[in-house]
Length: 85
Image (cartoon, rainbow, N blue to C red; front, side, top):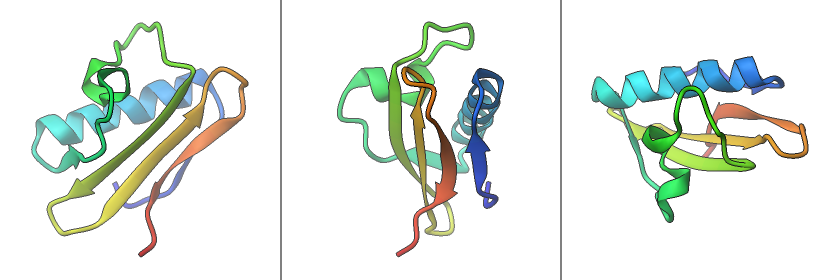
């Protein structure tokens, strides 16, 4: 979880979302900024369709915060990273 990951392809996006879903389901992470259900990571289907842009924040059991920020529409990619305080 603690490693910064670049997301520069659809496969990398699918991989990081799969990992995040697993961490949520196992109780290691919670999503903390669900302003609209389209941004709820658990609502993103493995096979798509995918939202144009994902901006989601999470916290873990030791108090670290993370952000997934990915632009799928323009192909700009994105990152999974720890939010620096």
